[in-house]
Image 1: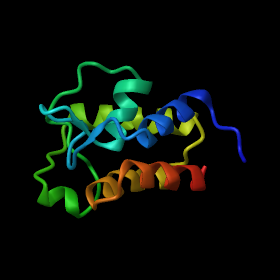
Image 2: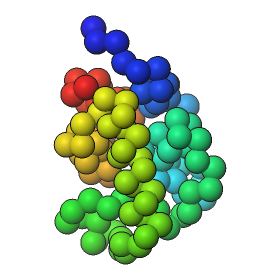
Image 3: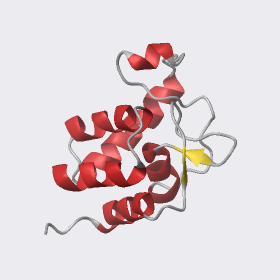
Image 4: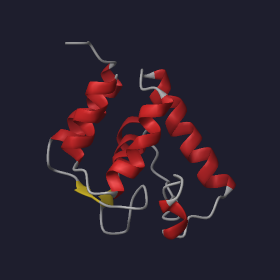
Length: 118
């Protein structure tokens, strides 16, 4: 089994523990829900000031969710993807995460996908 960076392992363990509420279309919501990247941003990157408008910027489906490209969203997601790359998650893998989250994959399934592709 490949040894993962401790910060990456922390994120995957959080996704696997069934204690976090999952949401779709945004990093986090006002009801305590987070997407897989929201968990990463909040608990690994320790970002406490994520705006509710930080919706998923992936092709196709994002337009249907009302995604508006903003400097805030671009900087936030670029920062998340850059940090994931630093921890060993390639851009192709990280780009798939919002779509998997929003199409119904559980946090555990997403964690397994990341483990299989790192």
